[in-house]
Image (cartoon, rainbow, N blue to C red; front, side, top):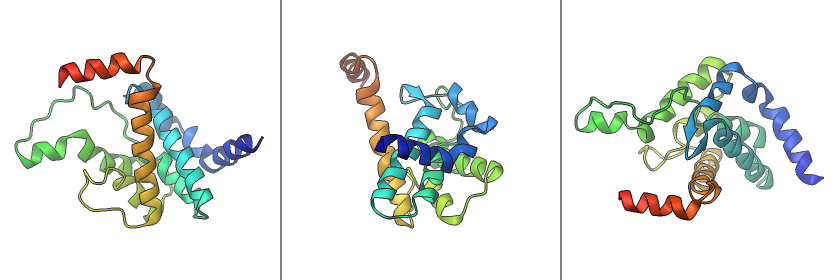
Length: 168
């Protein structure tokens, strides 16, 4: 019953985000072998749980974490035209935090700390480190959830790993 309480509280905190028509579009985007919507909500939920456990502002962290990957188009197969440093800047791992922040600011009322969570969650790919403890929580939880999705949640993780190794 304790877990149900956490789910209910989390849904109350981020309900306007996860039911928003633009955020719902994330359901159509593949991410780490799963959907981007599922990934974003998982990072939001686990960041909320960590922040709550640590006595932090868990409501703010839940909202920032849920919005951390709020980009609305698939990056797989996207043509990159830049050269050198500009090509690196076009790469998804470097560019999507800024896009997510732009979308979050467009559709939701976010504060400076939440903006930092969104734009710096890819540290160390994004060179400037998170500026607050909530941002570090989101960064760590995102890495944990992504690793879990890539390695353990896929239906055939051993087959997937062999496939990845053969392409390396």
